[in-house]
Amino acid sequence: MSHRPQHPFPGRRSVLRGSLAASGALALPTALGAAPAFALSGRPKAGWGVQTGDVTADSGLVWVRSDRPARMIVETSATESFRNPRRWQGPLLGAGSDFTGTTRLRGLPAGEQIHYRVLLADPQDPRRTGEPVTGTFRTTPLGRRDGVRFLWSGDLAGQGWGINPDLGGYRIYDAMAELDPDFFLCSGDNIYADGPITATAALPDGSTWRNITTEEKSKVAETLAEFRGNFRYNLLDENLKRFNAQVPSIIQWDDHEVRNNWYPGEVIAASDTRYTEKSVDLLAARGRRAFSEYFPLSTLRPDNQDGRVYRVLRQGPLLDVFVLDMRTYRNANSPDTQTTDPQGILGAEQLEWLKRELSRSRAVWKVIAADMPLGLVVPDATEGQPNIEAVAQGDPGAPLGRELQIAELLRFVKHRRITGTVWLTADVHHTSAQHYQPSRAAFTDFEPFWEFVSGPLNAGAFPASALDNTFGPERVFVKAPTDSNVSPAGGYQFFGEVDIDGDSGELTVRLREQDGTVLFTQVLQPGRVGQ
Image: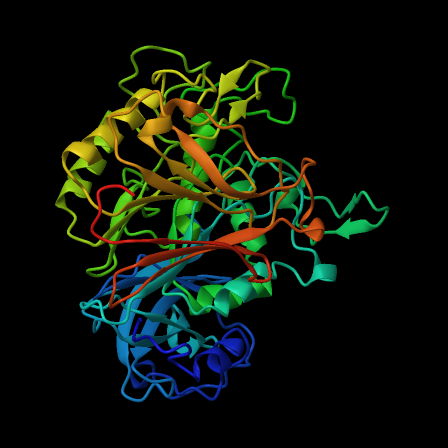
């Protein structure tokens, strides 16, 4: 059994419930001068809450957005009282980053609860500060005694299903927060830049779905301002803001941060009159910049667009998380039947990075966070052609197209005897568990492994995807609707949980519904190359 208590920080949620409200009782740092009245007008405000990301044993990134130019200041403390806080001076927030900013906290104690508050100061008068916004997170432990618990999902505000006040908004985040995870892995499609949100939509039962709307979400995103507005839209949801203040994230991206099924070099057809800008590369550059502004990523910053989304996050001796980018380096979508494919879906450089980091990892478990599934057929009908969007193309024989790159990786894992690999993904808007077994496969030079699918968080739900037998998947569990684009009001919203026991090292996966109900459980044993 893990030594982690069920609710190790009893005062935590009560503090977080008030983190987005006024907190004028908190003392200002003495370096900023005497405490003024926070309620005075003209002071910077952080109405979009706070976030933390890419937390390690001794570091973490804190994010905030101001409503005007401001200096970002972060204070940390071991307690909620903020007695003797440690102070971090962050960047100046201005129009160049849409008034967003990230401060890196270094030298933190491992395996501890960190309480933090963000102050926004007037750049011309440091005495003039807005109301502090508070949050908390746990740093990664150096030992394994406490175990690791994290959640994953993806696909937010898709298919026109946005923040519905009648349903209480994005309620799934409250169910996830109740599990008190160490972090949340978002598997992509954080926004739907190509999915306008209208005020109402008709539901099959004759009722009406209502959305909160904004100008930027009234059309497909083309300008940088429109992409930024897509990220701000989700932060109108109070459930999400509370969750962000309580749970650090590991964020990856997929296609809808730019456009459905996009790939580098794509040119939008003239017939798609929604877009006046036809260069997908230009749209992707704008989407990538907004993505880097609105999430705290250790490898990608607004002032460094040469950075990358793929990275490995060390979460102590029990877990390494390998975050993939299956979008930026892929080849063009096609029927995917080519017999040679060195670029594949990862690109040659990222594949070599993944091999190298997997072989170096000494963690008990190596979670491969993929933004697209391996053996589920995901077609691309964007241009009316029978193209393939993910890896599998439906041919059950020997690897073809992008499968060749995955086969190379699976072979590498087997022959290097890399233990404890598990694949997590989202994208297909249903939840399922697939076991891949060489005895069922056309390609057999790999060890058995599991792939777990979750999502959507708040988007249309779709029927289960077809399986491709090249790597021998068996769908052990699935929950999906029989109709397409079922609204969140109809259910079928999902997230997954991974719980690693500190004593035994066992990894338990639970697939959960929107309210937290467990649908499926699978326990995996540590120290094995395949299982």
